[in-house]
Amino acid sequence: MQSTAQGTIDPAEVAKFEAMAADWWNPDGKFKPLHMLNPCRLDYITSHIAAEYDRDLTAERPFEGLRLLDIGCGGGLLCEPMARLGATVVGADAAAGNIPVARIHAEKSGLDIDYRHTTAEDLAAAGELFDVVLNMEVVEHVADPLSYLTACHDLLKPGGLHICSTINRNPKSFAVAIVGAEVVMRWLPRGTHDWKKFITPDELYELMRKAGLDPVDRKGFVFNPISWQWRLSDRDLSVNYVTAALRPV
Image (cartoon, rainbow, N blue to C red; front, side, top):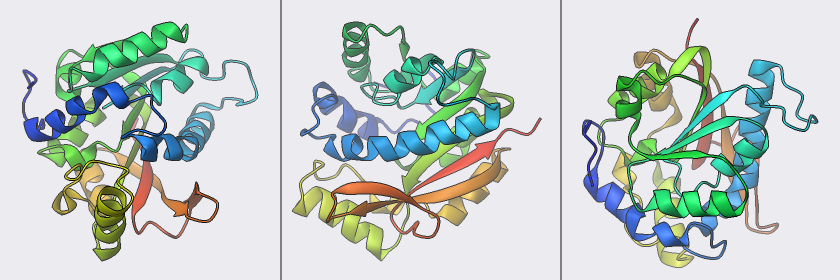
């Protein structure tokens, strides 16, 4: 399936995730790595939203009044906690098969989330605007990262927050994200990632600046094989990492 705005959509990448759609909410299935990473991702996301919009995370619904977009939402692993925190959430995905999975799970969870089979480009062309755009583990799957990030910029209100995570490109990331995750641990089907499409932190910062965004932070996601948990790191961005950027006012 291709969008009407085909500029950044890679049909082969979309097909990979459509084939795995039914497995999104299985913590021991094909998306096990994301389930394991989710607490760490949420820690970074919530802390940056709270800091940018002066919200108290101890409140019952601290993100009330904020409109949030999760591009490449998959089955809704980030949309649902954002909705529980009070945000008005739109989840968008280019893979049609992900949307009914996400909708059904949200309904069973009693959550009102606006899931759409669409792209960042189509949403931007429609004039949609958000306080926060989440762009997690997507940029390494698109055909044109700069055009895609430009669409993300256009979707933000002035002063809006863009959070983007992806995978570094170096020998270690090939060993960990390709050989380790896909071949040894079999956490992901072979071919899920293309190492040549990975982006270094400096490259991502430069792409975001060209897209009109102002990068303000980056941290690594580091996996501990002993505790079997992820943590944030100020120094180790060698494999998985996350960034925060703002659309200038």
